[in-house]
Image (cartoon, rainbow, N blue to C red; front, side):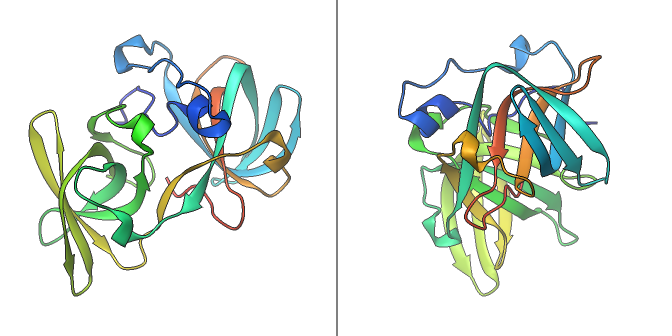
Length: 209
C-alpha cells in the first residue's frame, strides 16, 4: 500500500521555477490528508481548476490550492548521475535480485535530502520510490548500476539503457495547454483532488514518475 506521504519530487519548486528561496520543506509527519497521484493529460486549465484526463481514462477536475507551484522536467542522461547526487528512482524488484529502475529524477542541489527514504509507489504494481544519495555509479554492458544510501541503508538499482532520466526545470502557466502531460501529487478531498504542486511536460519531455 502506498504510504500516505507527499514525496519530495516537487519540493522546493519555488526555487527551481522562479529562482526564489526554496519553499519550506514538507515532511511526511506534517501530511494529514490522504495523498493521491494524478497522471494524465490536460483537457483544460482555467483559474484554480485543472481538468485532466487520467491515464486510467477518467476525466477529473483538480483544484489548485492557493499559492500552488508549477515546474516541468528536462531530459538528462544516465551518464549525468554521479556519486553525491541526490536522486529519486522509481523501480521494480528484478527476477535476479535487486531492483530495476523505471525512471530516474536527478534532483537539483537545492533539493538534496528532501523526502529521503524508500517507500511504496504507484507507477506500476509493486513499484517503489527511493529518494537517496548516490554512493557509486558503475557503467555496465546493459546500462548502469547505482548504489544509493538513505538513513544508513544502501540499495542497488540497475538502470537499463533507455530508462527515462530527467531533472526539474522551470515552467509557466502558459505551459498548461490541452494535451500537455502532467504528474500531480494531490490531497484526496471530498470535492476531488486538491493540488499544491503540478509537474508538467514541455518540449517533448513528459514527467516519467
